[in-house]
Amino acid sequence: MTAQVPATEPSSPTPEITKGNNPNVAIIQGLVGSLMMLAGSFGVGWLSLASSELRRNPVIMWLRFETEGSVLAVFLLALGGMLLVRSWLRLGQRITSWGPETRPVVLKAIIAWGAPMCLALPLFSRDVFAYIAQGQVMVSGLNPYKDGYSQISNYLQTGADDLWAQSPTPYGPVFLWLEEGVIRLTGGQPEFSILLFRLISLVGVAMCVYFVPKLAELHNINPNRALWLTAANPLFLTTFIASIHNDALMIGLALAGLYLAATKRALPGILLITLSIGIKPITLILLPFVGLMWAGKGASWPRKFLYWFMTAGLSLGLLWIMGVLNGFGFGWVGALSTPGSVWIWYAPVGFLGMIVATLGNAVGLPGWTFADIVHTVGRVASIIVVFWQMFVGEYSRLVRRLSLAFAAVVLLAPMIQSWYVVWLIPLFAVTGIRNDWQVKTLYLLVSFFMVYAISDQLDIWPYFDFSLSAARQIAAVTALGFALYLIFLDPKTKVLFQKRLTEPSPGELRAR
Figure (cartoon, rainbow, N blue to C red):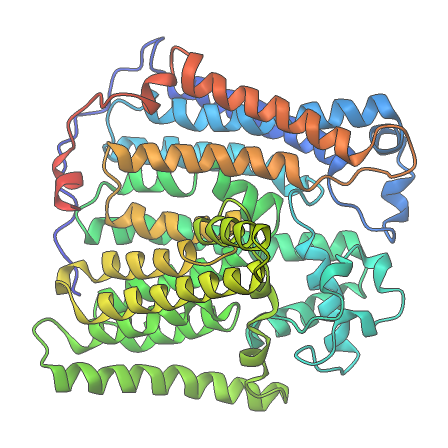
């Protein structure tokens, strides 16, 4: 795939800003929502037992250890998160032209909404504490592909989830080095470690902000709309900044590598994608499509196979060298099943497996054995889709084919996490999300996963009357009520979830 003419979607000169369409109003509202989330994080965000100084802060003590404070924190988090969703939707409505003059507006929104999250306690996930514990495993000279962080003395003090304490890490060698480096710099001190891991995530966010518009232009898709759909997206911001997932750096490197490969710089592209694989190996899916880019348009099948082998050889060779350097080889291959042994009800395959298991158990059959078969069928189906996209399709649609292959791997798995969905958003945004059912689906997914995140993982002190169950119920009712308001009642946003209001732009039509 080669560089194409930049996007040619019609755009007007700098639009006249009127009281009704001033995007700054949406940006300010989103900033308020993000600040509310920041305040709520001090009460229900994750805090390790080792964070003694923060635990003695009077404001944090009231928000965490008093019933009134915890209730307030839950409300602030739920209302702030959903206000951010509304602000994102309204920003898209208030931008009447997606011309070059809108880039600073979208960037302003990303900065304004993301900045408060940089100071928040970790929200919606405890993974950053697992990074700290795994870094201590590395510093201790243990093998993280064999030794869980339960081998570290007082590991519960770190705040890491005990569920994965005896499991090998599913991360690649690059992220193991980053974990080790952070712990060597901070000595395992939790607050500084969290800040450094958040900084690493911000590097990934910055790469996404830089390369999403460039990839969109290659596909004649409006780069500013693609940036709004991706990086101003509240699910993107909360997942990568507030939750501090290492997926931010993984996707940032992958997008950078895709762009280089798509502009005839295959070797540095493969290097960056290999670094992405070294964070989380899921981006191995990109390699066959990068191989096709390297082979070039109109390549014969022998040439395609040659470049597939060359791409795989280079990437796996680099990973082998990394394995030699850290002494762990390809230990991450055996650890890939760590998060894959579970399912969740809202994943289509997970839900189908649950139905099969329930029916099977009801008639005296081994229902969960049948559910495992359903899960396996889903995984096999995803592999078939990946191979289909590798072998069938137009050269000019390689990134779109990659997006569909990646989506199959995510959506046909029994477990889907919110950050899995965030992997897909930039890939689909740069190849075109039409202003019809496609963008409505994105709106609904963002709303659903924000509601789910807000009501799922809350750090509630277990020794007072306000229980975790009650906190989740309050968060769920608040967030779900706000979401239903946006979809059915809000006079400004409900139209986004109903009939189509505008015809697709030329750039959107070209993405079909």
